[in-house]
Length: 214
Image (tube, rainbow, N blue to C red; front, top):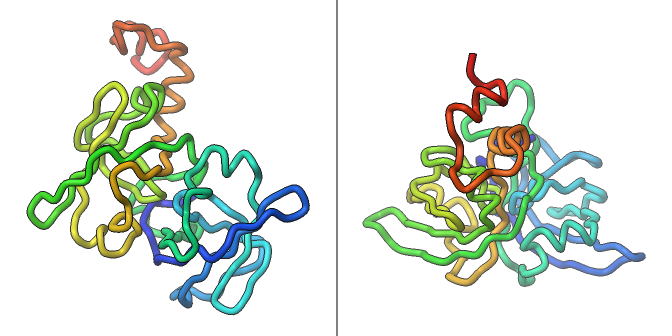
């Protein structure tokens, strides 16, 4: 589990085919809370990866074909900035929201607009992901915990403050770029319990039938 609060920006060094799988090397600065440990989890652009080998200022991780197919990792160029976050500890502050590090799908950045000192981003995604999202709820984009400012049937908008813009890889994203999308886990459970969403949407009767209302 993660919080979606990025701890540092790393560098995507290489992605190579190895023995029927994939191996990635990520460069990083020293960690404030101690060196990485073999086997621990690190979220890279929102995708939970296991540290398989440790180098000097780098770590190696193995990737499945499924991971590359579902995420935007394969689109990263050598030297690209990547958001890094170590796994959440029970004693950590939960400043963002509960992020599993299991990317649901790849969205597409459709709008990048300066709003004074802030930035407005619109990301196109599937109708299914949009249904699992609510205004003022949380969504993880490239591993960053963000608040949904607005949404439609196949898009969400977020507003990004200067600090987040400066300490994440968002400033490198341009219109048309793919982005890793993970919707709030609570939205997924509600959608699963309710089954297929009908055109009339969520109703009080449906919530009561699913056991959400007393």
